[in-house]
Image (cartoon, rainbow, N blue to C red; front, side):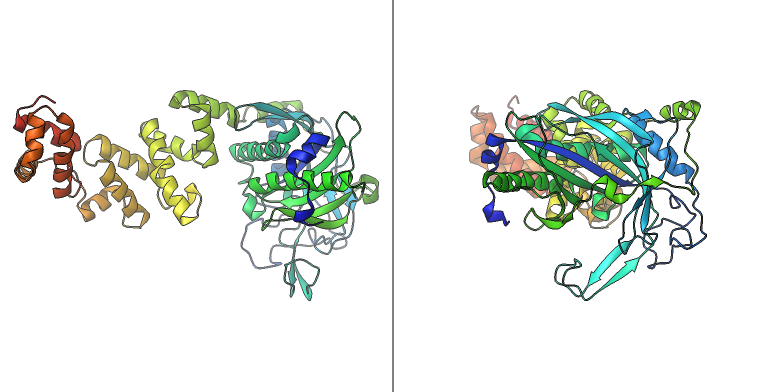
Length: 502
């Protein structure tokens, strides 16, 4: 089915209720793999970070990574989950070329964390609770590169290359319970949930959760049921969606596609699907297996995991302030609205503003520069705010120079421009470009006298009571000083020289 055959979104929601399930895989930031001592560092040559264990060679035995278990417990606690007193690994059997053992070591009916929830805030401030079914430990597969085709997929490729460096990387899979009741906001809920989960994972410090690098990816399960019916419909699973926007688009597209199929009398096939960034569509992958098709059985080479309650409570004590709680606290401290805080969050500026305030800047000034001039520059350059070549400490220094009167806003923008261009620190840019505000009263007085002499008609209007006309003289002085005068002081001097009260 092509995009043009979809029913409208409103038409789909008029007849059907969407039911979602989201499965998020998070690559943990451990130094070594889940069941062996191979490095997890990025950028190594293909197949250079492998050993008999992660290659599945005969006789090689796995050992559980304690840091991986610790990260799993902390994630479970942050998601308000129960932590199992006893759990074990299982073998999930299926063949795929980038899985060298021909089975994945995972957890099946005995996950380490279960029955939790995550509250997410939508753009209008509404809070929606997403219930968590489970969070379990497993290992990642290797990477296949399909060569010779037009799409980069296996269909049409002449051959494939396999890199097993990633095979065995620790993963946590977080699975929601069926998400019902979101209605037309289901795609928005999906996006908000993954965004909140990403912030939580980053706050815990267990992963950088960079979706564009595959460190966090989402499978979007979706089905529709006719209005008023309790039974769920047949689901599809859109695999490995790797951006927040794409999660929302994938859910929206599948709602429209399912509705079109069902409304025409067709049946939904339970299958995996591929998401296409270029147009937001999905296409069929493979018929989806049921759990029994994987022939799960307990992993005989690994002992069960039985975290003591003392250890669990010790880890609970290491949890940071949860992102939503932190945002609400910061919003109150900064004195901004929910909408303004959402804009800061959408821009990825929360941590940058916090760091700038920690470096000494007032919160309103820190937010002004990150959400104004710097956001504009990031947009022009097509990069995220954190990618700009300026630090929170440097922004705080610009704020300090403005506060002490060495810079005005115009000169501050030029200073930031110089820092971004690699010309040095704010102070070095100010010195090199000669950007300091002209504070010499004699020099300012001369510039004011020249402005008055050059605009006698304006001076007469001011003397006659039209104080607003002073703006023209202020502008003339600012032009003469290349914007390096203090506009407020210039206006005061104009009024003094013309004998008019400001």
